[in-house]
Image (tube, rainbow, N blue to C red; front, side):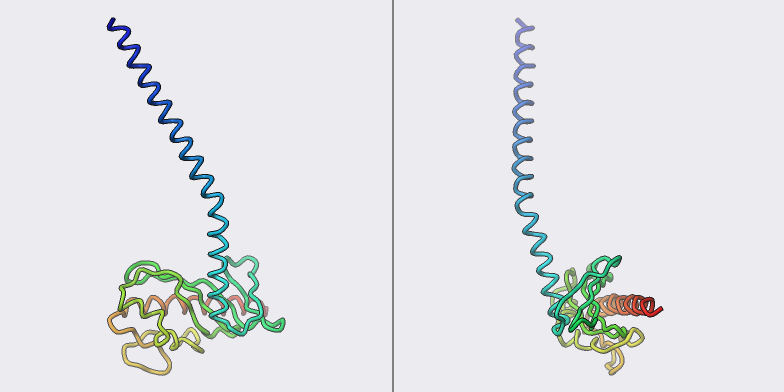
Length: 189
């Protein structure tokens, strides 16, 4: 009798295991199916957001063309001529990584930038996206991209209460300007 009870318990455990395996398989199939439908839409949305951001940064451009061998680099073209480069920029701020797109002229001057993601303090560090701070960058070469607390025409005045964020954004944009400068210098050689 004890032997039958043990056999029945094993059979019951096997049924539970089989049911669990079937449930996991079905759930996995549903998730995979959903992903296969939603991922292309998500990719298209990311491409659209990037294109919109580039058009916002370089309004005069007729088109944006990916640069071979440079991940996420684009040249902004108008009437067949390169008028700007749009390149990724990243730096570590107070709350972590600040990811941006920087628009830079072929002669390595900042045009503008757009913050794509950040974790900076609301009401302080998030001022990096506002025109009052961003507009300081236009037309500046790498050497002028230095954060100061007292305003000057040649540098970047820090956001009040967010010096770390100000320095991080400025460092990221400066590195982007320097990268474009190096890239265009190599094109001329």
